[in-house]
Length: 282
Image (cartoon, rainbow, N blue to C red; front, top):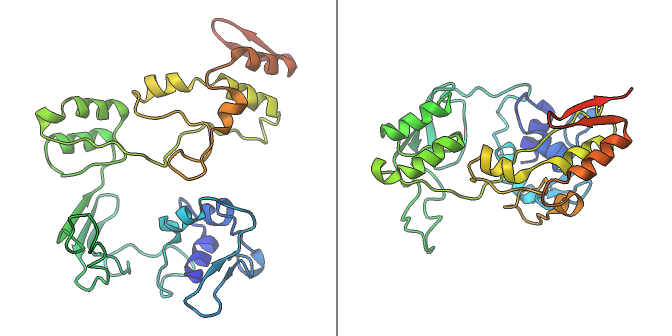
C-alpha cells in the first residue's frame, strides 16, 4: 500500500489525481528520495499489515481520498518509472472482474473473476445479492460525446449510461422516461464546478472577492443546469462530511453588486452599465 501511494506521487503522471495525495491529502512528497512521500509520513509498524498516515495538517475527508482510484494498491511488479500498460494481461487486481478485452478510448470488456475473495461480502445484509459478482460479463462502451451517449440509451444499445449527459439531455430523458421504457436516477455527487483565478495575474484579493460577490448561483443552477444541481458555498461538496456554507456567510446567498462595485472602484476600475464594461484607470 505504501509503495503504491509512493509510486502514484512519484510518477505524478499527466492527468492523474496524484495531487489529491501529496497536496490535498497532506501527505506531501520529498525530492530527497525521488519525490515519494516524505520519510516518516507513511509508516508500517509494528508489522507489514499495519499502515499509519501522518498528515501535515488535518484533512477531514482523508478516508474518502483513500477510497479513490489514485490510492488503490497495485502490485510491486507494476512499472515504477512510467504508466502501467492497460492492455489485457497487464492490469492486475483482486476485484470481482477481470479485463478480457480493451480498445483504448472505445471498449472495455470485463468477465467475472472465478477466484474473487469477497463473493459473500453482502451476506446477511438487506441487499438482494446472493453472490458477487452478480453478472458474468460487463461491457463498457466509451463514447466521445453526450449526443452519442443519449442515442445509446434511446435505442437501447446499452443498459446504463452515466456522468456525461448534458443537463438538457437529462431533462429530456426524464420527460420521456415512460415512453422510452427507461428509468432516470438522480443522486448526490461529489462533482463540483468552480471559477479558478491565476493568482499570479489577479494578485489583488479584492478583485477575486468582487467576483465572489457577483456570482449568481441561482441563475447558474436554473439556466445552465436546468435546476439539476445545488448551489455550493464551499470547496467541500455538500455530500462530504464537515461541509459548511462558508462562502455564503462571507459573500451572501445572492449577488451583491453594490459590494462588488465598491471593491472594484477602490482598486481603480470603472463600471459602466448596462453593457457591463470593466476598465482599469491605470
